[in-house]
Structures are given as structure tokens and as C-alpha cells.
Image (cartoon, rainbow, N blue to C red; front, top):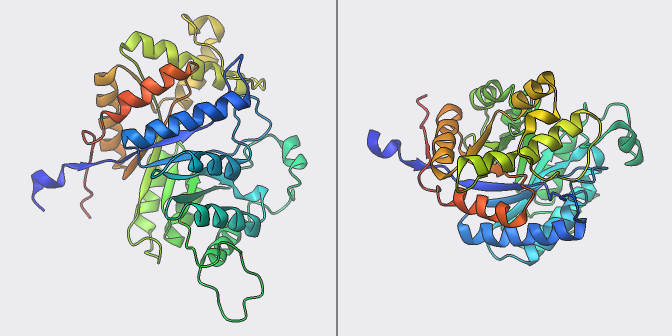
Length: 345
């Protein structure tokens, strides 16, 4: 491959949907909005569409993640659907294997299973989920391998099978915002997605560990790293920055222990928080690309260059549904123009 061609490897785009519930709306509204966004994302050429498990959050409607994936899959035809992610410590691996085995049976070659090790909620809700409160983190590697066992070809005398699920080889991804999942994904030879849209601090170190320690597996022969970021696009930079204030408000409300529905945008975000809070939110959301098409183009290319990402996953917490569709439309028009920087090993 020539040097010129090596620099022209387009980075695929995917969508992370938190099924946001804006103020004045209901989860039913959120589900219909998610379906419409997924249908447009399919038409616009996004590679995959993932939904995330959260609990006890009135502004996020995707708690029953596998059920919502089924709803979206039924309303689309080709785009890959998956979890970004299922919080595995909340569940029995067999139950998740059966759920995603069912999805993969209904929608062949379209289902991904992204796994996280956090609870996706607060401690009291963890208890309501009936999680064991001791040893759950230590069990995560064993739970992942148990899931792999349920998706593999059935073995002679195998006493417990996932039906459906066994033999379907549903692709498993590991998600994380620290070094733990990067190391595990490398050891198991799995694709890795980093949650830099809200916790970017360890992004570069995690990617370095994942790539340097990666061991090929039956699922994946070389490392595949997806970087999740926030992207808010509009016709003008000013409009995009105003739309982004909804995400900023939601984040500071969460940090204050007052999570709620996605707030409407405001003209002056500085009037709503202290300088210390502003600094904290800016740090947490610093992998956000906000602006018009050209601004977003430069931002995405910079992130692709700095991270050497194999794929970019776009999160867009936008209050107005029409504006959200327009944002993802603008971003989709940049597909084929954001290039991966090839690694020289």
C-alpha cells in the first residue's frame, strides 16, 4: 500500500443513543424518537446503533436495553444494533445470552453485545436490581467468558445451553472508561470501546494498553478500538453551542445528585453553575465536537488522528428531536472524509 493510500482509510461512524427523555416528554416519546433516529441513521450510512443500560434515571429510557434493541431492530433493515452497553454485573450471563441469542435469531448478522462492568446506577438502585454486593467486579472476567461459552458451538455433554444463543457467535465488545476493560479486551482478543464522551481521562493510556497487549482470538485477529465522543452539529457554531447546553446541564445535575429529564437549552450556561462546576464539566465533556459542519469536520479529524480510532461512535444529547436529526445528518455527511492514521508497528 502506498503512503498516499495508507492515509486515506475512512473511519466508520456509529451512533450511541441514550434514549433521552426531554423535559415535557415521556419514555414513549423517547422510544419513537429513537426509532426515527435509527431509521435515518441507517439511511445515512452509520455502521451501528447502540443503546445503553441505565437505571433510575428519568432522563434516560433505555433501562430494558435488549427489549428496546428488539423494537429498533424491527423498525430497521440493515444497520447493526447493539448495547453500549449491557452492565453485566446486573445480570446472569445465561439470561443475557438468551436475550441476545433471541435477538440474533430474529435479526441475523445485525446484533452486537457490548458489555460494561459498572452498575449504570446508584447504590440503592443496585440493591433493587438484586445484585450481589460482594465480589461482583472480580467476577466480571469470568462472566464474560461464560457468555462466550454460551455463544460458542455446543460441546459434548454440555449441561447448560443458551437456547437460543448457543452456536450463534454473537460478537462481544468490552466497554470501559478506565484501564481495566482495555486489559481484559486485549487478553480475550475482543473489540474495545472507550467511553470518552463522559470520562476521557484515561483514553490514550487505555488505547495504548489495548493495542500493545492484544492477543488474536477466534472473534478478532487484530485490535479494533472504537472511541465514543459527543458531537453536536448545527448550521452555525452559535446554534450548536446553545444546543450543547442541554448536555452540560444534564451532566451538572447528575453531579449534584439531582438527575432528571434532559433540560431545554439556555442562552447563558455560565449563570447556572459555579466556576468549579464549569471546570469539572468541561473536563468530563472535553471530547465533544460542537459547531457547524466545518467545525465538526476539523474536530472529528483531530480526534481520529490523535486516537488512531478504528471507529467513531457519536453521542448527541439534544433537546429538540428535529435538531437532533439534523445534527446526525450533518455528521453523516462527513463520512468518507475523516481518515484513520495507520499505525507503524
